[in-house]
Image (cartoon, rainbow over all chains, first blue to last red):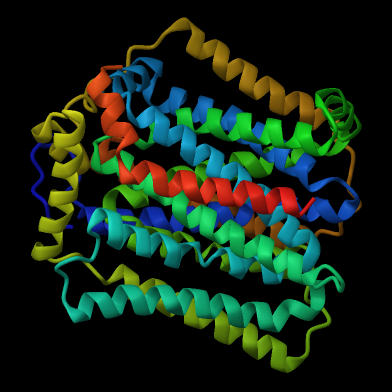
Length: 430
Length: 33
């Protein structure tokens, strides 16, 4: 994106397109890492319970990370300016909660290796909604279309090849069709969830404010669903108590998911959902790396399967590279501006300010956040919950390859530090 | 919230597309029980 930089002189001049690409790829790393705890579904726990654990972890993280980065004053001020977006943030959280539960059904019935690429069609769904509702890719030439659409299909195609190569390792006979339907349904829901994302960001909302509200929609929905599926709130509490020794892991997964989701939100803000979501969907490569290297899921694979995995991974990487190089041209940026103006007119927003925020130059971002005492309480409670769960955790009898785990943990933290720094220098997390 | 804002929200296609998909998703989830 080549919109002018107008705010602080001390900020980085990195293009927003490049920044969005980095955010999308960092999101992929963290979203892929977050899937590892869903393996606990096979340890005899209800999918709803795993989902509930992830959402509770996400709830804790979604309050603490924005509070740590911007302070509650900034978040509330942002929400007061665009109160209508609270509806969409809640709606997105509800969509995520239902989709996440469907993914767990998918994993249980057909295995992670098949379910994962199926729900990753969400990038194509998101690309369609981005084009239809937010004028993404409108006005762009055949070259840009080819890069984005070709890249998105390459990522889905690569995912399908990876599924083909690894399917025999994890497929469960019997309920396969239901698992496939659940995973595809999750893909449609997740792809549609990006409508609220994009709407919020072309209206100038900060991703940190959005996820703070989002979390109420997801926790409320999952709690209701889990209570229904467990025959009442009392049963749910008993089940949670029974699952106490393993709750730390889905909590941790939820935490990683929030980090990935935040970067995904920044990607959706700066390069749109048509480009940002396919990039973050390369998370399957990271999910595969965890499965193959740490959990030794594919140790018995034949040479032909290994060739397929390599091919699928390379196709996926080529797709990501293609999208990375699809910088929106001037005519597409005009379409983006029209979509933004529609929101400003409809909801009475300050068009000039929204334009600045969308360009990463939020006028408020350079002011240091005013800290309040309850923010320290939020941080202490959040850390306390993780420590409490960690202390009571019982081993789930999974065989882990420790050296590879260390390598992947470092490979997860490094892009976090790098991309976080780039975001701060360029936009001050605006 | 102002009445005009409420009308803007309720007549916004950006609202009803996700709401429709959410309802379908909940129906699917319930049928998978």
